Image (cartoon, rainbow, N blue to C red; front, side):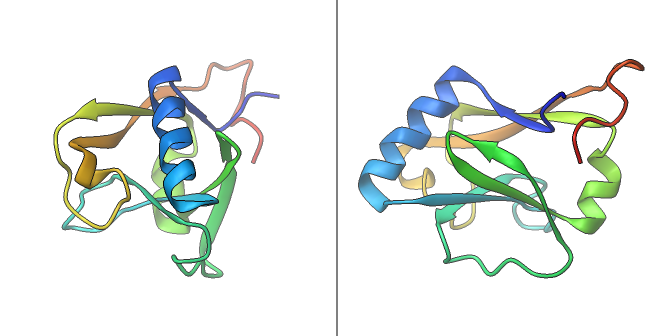
Length: 117
């Protein structure tokens, strides 16, 4: 079964660094106006997951959620979480380090269907 969300090797390095500093982590794919549609990294439990959030899977051992409305837009794709130089806005844990997580995507093939969710 194809994973709905994966992380690049560079993103996994940053997840490990942030976990060393902050303990267990979680991600939420933001759909807000201020952060655009950005993956946000929080200490696990500091972002309140609601009934409308969908658990896509895990990256680097961290749960990754997306809001139901965003999921409808992205359900035909695999999310690929990467990290790039530059400061994003918002409260994501990587921001003070001069990097930001970024979502890339690829459409599932016909054989893959809509992945595992």
